[in-house]
Image (cartoon, rainbow over all chains, first blue to last red; front, side, top):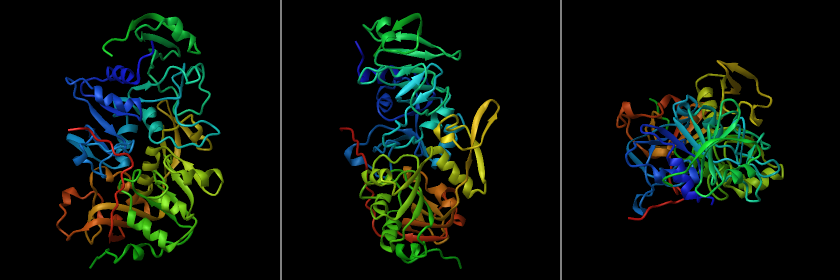
Length: 219
Length: 232
């Protein structure tokens, strides 16, 4: 059985390590903030100029001068700091972000990522995604395994315009976890409970390597 | 004596001509120069080229100038919240150049710092690399991006003094300090004008040298795009 969006966010939260500086993209990645294990100190970066995103505000705390990159109202934690957009992307492009978790339209065997435009449709823009994937120490994609119409999103070669080349390290989907190897192949490392290797392979264009995939736990 | 304070937002923007290039601070609707935008709506100048991370929404921010057909070209990283923008873009009335957010910020920073161009890994091997010089440094492919210098820059700060020193509030800082540096003429609007000396020299975000005109914003709507709250 495919896991839910919340379970995907929970699984993605297992990528966090104590002391990590992390940037979370819009959508399921943003939900990861709700599942950070309490024994970890993790600092969330917001690319509009904040280190230390806190929980959503109470109605009384709402401040129009304090939003995240998804333009949602937020709070800031003790020890947080604000900075300009150029400083924000200096820390991103300079390789100081330990982990970037973001959504995708397509990923391919080389770890190429497409998540910003569909030719022929109105393009909204790449925002900070190209900067994040160009330089974060580790890039984890969280997305549905296949499109709504059942088309594979994990491909031999991305057909959509790229956001970044050879940038994805790991893919977490509603069916499994796949690692992108430096040698240019994809390895199935975890399966969602009740999902078979055959089902995953049938919804994935490239041939997957199966060593000994574990079953996802604590989701 | 130096006194950069201008009487009104209208006075501050009255010499911005049609066809001017503008850099505008703000992220979404957060930290945008609301009063200067409203003043440009009144002067009615046309054919503006705007460097701004976003394009506002249909009825606020730069969306107001778009709706009034005062903008010819936008250079932005994300323009998803504006239906009129989409209509003008698809009909060819509006020219749009999408640029990665970090590249836009760095182009402004570089322009303001006298760096004419720089190599960045962002966007290498993608659509946005087309037509740009590419070079490999230590095994990393990079593309050449140009610094931005505009005719005018419009920024919004929380506090300022007559010398043009500025302090921003929380994430309303965003692009504003970078925009402040890249205008040949930089106009700042503030929520409060304070006496010289009352801002701690340690805490000033934008040194006054970058600011040419300062105006007190008379009205702040500070619209929020997405209010998200928790219970308790």
